[in-house]
Each structure stands twice: as C-alpha cells, then as structure tokens.
Length: 212
Image 1: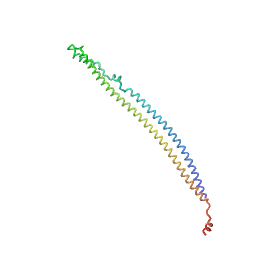
Image 2: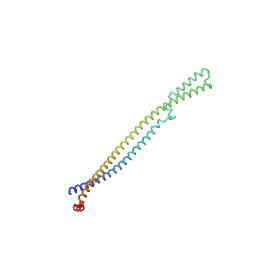
Image 3: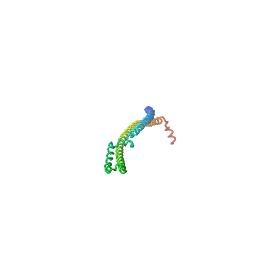
Image 4: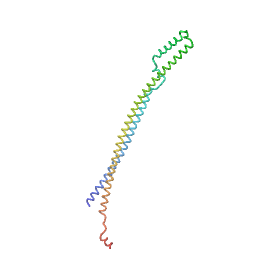
C-alpha cells in the first residue's frame, strides 16, 4: 500500500510539474512570437528604406545620362569651323573661276554643303553621346542592382535567424506539453491503482451461497 501511495504522489507531483512547465513554455512561445513580429517589422522597415534610397539614388544618377539636344553640343567636333571653312573653299574654287561666286547656284551649293556637314556632325555627336550615356546607365544600373541584392540578402538572413529562434521556441513548448501528457498518464494510472487497492472486494461466502 505504501509504495502505491508514494508512486501515486510522485506521479501526481510530476504531472503538476509538467503542467507548470508547459504553461511556462506557452508563455515563452508567446513572447517569442511577439519578438519575431517586432523583429520582422523592423527588418521590413529597414529593407523598404534601403530599396527606396536605392531608387532615389538611381534616379539622381541617371539624370546626367539622359539624351538631350543640349547634351549633343558637348560631343560636337571642335573642328567644325575648320570643316565649314573647307567647304567654303571648295565652293569658291568651283564657282570662283567663272566669276559665279555670287550666283544663285553658288549660294545654293554652299548652303547644301553646309547643311549636309552640319547634319553629319550632329549625327556623329548624338551617336557618341548615346553610346556614352548607355555605358553610364549600365554602370549605374549594375551599382544599384548590387545594392538591391545586398539589401535583399541581408533581409533574408535576418528573416532566417528570426525564424530559427521562433522554431526553437515552438519546439521547446511542444516538449513541455509532451512531458505533461506523459506525467498526466502516469498519475492517472497511479490513481487507478490506488482506487483498485481500496475498492471493497466481493464476499467469498456470499458467492458460495448464491452458487448453491
């Protein structure tokens, strides 16, 4: 009888202890979930801020690489005046010998040659500007892309660490409730044994009379 009492008491005490442990683990789990939520909000805010800054930086840096008419002048051949002078000389040689320098044909020829040269110079300057700007935009895009990748990798790492901490807390809680279930089962078994031990037994004599 005494061993049963001791075993039953130990089982009940173990069940209560396991229950308290499970409740403590439940509190820790809720704290871990709250901490995870706070961490992720902070990480998300930092990630959004980084991406916003990268977009602003990209917009600011690309302004200098936009194709604009005013930008073409920077790429015009500095020898443009010399080239126009050469055209004038050619026109003079062609029409000057016959005394036709002031003729309509001479003026028309000089105008056409000058316009053609200006178009060629402008197209060359635009193509050079466009090629240079495309290279600049590629460099800026790669730089901003690397910053975006860095921000994404950092966010993923932070999210992974926070997730691991939450998973660990969840696992601890499950172990606590497992201990509770085991202790409760042991306590119930001990209580059942005690109940059987104190349960009145049927009278043997009465059974014999009934059988007759």
